[in-house]
Image (cartoon, rainbow, N blue to C red):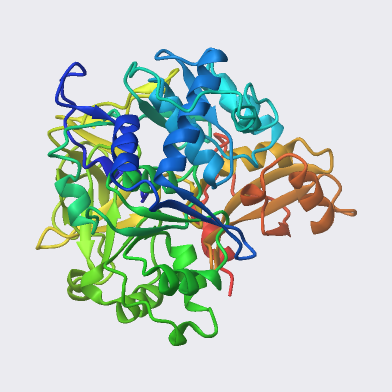
Amino acid sequence: MSLGDPESGERLSMSLGDPEEITVGERIGQLAADHPTRPAVVAVAPDGNRQTMTWARLESESNAAAHALAEAGVGPESTVTVVLSAGVDHVVATIAVWKLGGLVVPLDPHATPSERRATAAAIGEHISIGGPEETVSPLRWCTGNYPEDPLPSRGVPRSASLTGGTTGQPRVVRRRKPWTYRPDALLSESERARGMRLGQVQLVVLPMYHAGFSALYQGLVLDHQIVLMERFVPRLFPRLVQEHRVSYLRIVPALMRMVLDVPDLAEFDLSSIEAVHHGAGPCPEEVKRRWLDLIGAERVVEDYASQERVGSVLIRGDEWLAHPGSVGRPSDCEVRILDEYGTEVATGVTGEIYLRSTAARQPEYVGTGPALPERDGFLSLGDLGYLDAEGYLYLVDRKSNVINVGGANVYPAEIEAVLLGMPAVADAVVVPRSHRYLGQVPHAMVVPADAAGPPSAATLSAYCRERLSPTKVPMSYEIVTSVARKTSGKISRRSLVGRTDGP
C-alpha cells in the first residue's frame, strides 16, 4: 500500500487554456496580498530551532528565484529536479519552478552516486537545484541581485514522483493534474474525505521526496500554515502539535509507532488535531488502536492508493473498528479481485487487486516505464488481497518482493546485486524482517564463497553502506549454506520470510 498522491482528489484535468483557472504560483501571490505578515511556513530543525517564512517573503523570494532560474534556462518545457532537504529553500525553489511553468521532480538529497546516476538516466535532460550535480544553487537567488516582482505567468506547472515499481529500476510518474485550480474548487471531495479543509495548520513530517511533497504544496494552495519538520524527531512531534495547534497531518505507520514511544506523550494537548491521514504501509493493529484512542477514531483516516493513481480505497477509524485490518472501501473507483486467469474470485478469497475509476488510465512517465496489468479497464498495482461481504478490502501481501521500510519501498534485487558483486559472496537473497518501528527492514541471507572463512556482518554492512543509501542497507545478515533458489534461477522467497521474523 502506498500513500501515493491522492492529494489532488483525482480531479479531471480541464482545458489548460481555461481562463478561470489560476496556477499555484498565482495562488501564492493572492495569499501574500491577503495576509502578507502571516506565517506561511515554519521550518523546524532537529534541535527545535525555527525559521519562519511569511506569505510576503515566500512571494518575494520565489519571484527572485524565478528570475534566477529563468536566467539559468528554466522555462515551460523544463524538467527540474529539486534535490534539497525539507526546509524553506525547498519551498522557494519548487514554487519558483512552477511560476516558470516547469515540471518539478523532488529527489532524495541523500541518494548514493549510483542511485543518482540511475535516476538521472530515467529522467533524461533536466536542470537540478541542489545536490552534488546541481545546475543551480539556492544561494544564487539569495544574493539580492534579482528582482522580487513576479514574472508574467507562463506554461503549466506540473510535478512527477520517483518510483521503482516492482523492479527497483527508477521510473518517474507524472502527476495527472497540473498545479492549476479553479478558484471555486480549490478543495476536492477526496481531500475533504481525508480531513483537509481551507485554512488549517498542517504539520509536515514526511520527506519531500515522499508524500510530504504533495501534502505541503497542496496545503499552501489551501492557505495552510505549514509547520515543516526538516527531519522527523519523535519528541518534537507533540510539542509542535500543542504549540502551533496543528489540525491536519499525513504520516506513515513507522512514525506513528515512534510517536507512541515518546515518554511524556500523555502530558501534551493534541486536541487541536482534526485529521490524521496515514497510509504507505500496513499499520500494526496495536499501533492503530492506540492512535484511535489518542486522537479519536473518527479523526483517523487510512487509505490505499498509489502514485499511478488508478483509484483509492479509504477507511475512517470508526469504520476500522468494525472491520479491523481492512484498508476500506472504494472512494473513487471499483475494486475487483481476480485470479491468475482473470476470473473474479469469491468473497474472502485472496487474489490480485484490480482498480478502475473514471479517471484511471495507464501512468504517464517522464521518460519510459511499463504499462500496468490491465483487464477490462481495471488496472493492477501487483498487490494481493480479498474483499469481505460488505465490500471492505484487506491486503494480504505487498507488491512482489518489495520490502516496506517505514513507508519507503526497498527492492531486494538492488541489494542482492550489490552483495553478489562482493568477491566473498557466492549467493545472496534479501527478504523482509519485522522491526518494531519501521515495520519491515531488509535481512540478507548470504552464501559465502569460502565456507571456512565467511565474511562478518560488519564487513558485509560496510560494503553495502558504500554502495546503497541507508534505508536499503540490510539491518541484519545471516550466513547460510544455500538459498531457496529453483532450477530456473528464481528464489522461493515465501519459504524464507517466515524464518526471519525479528523480535
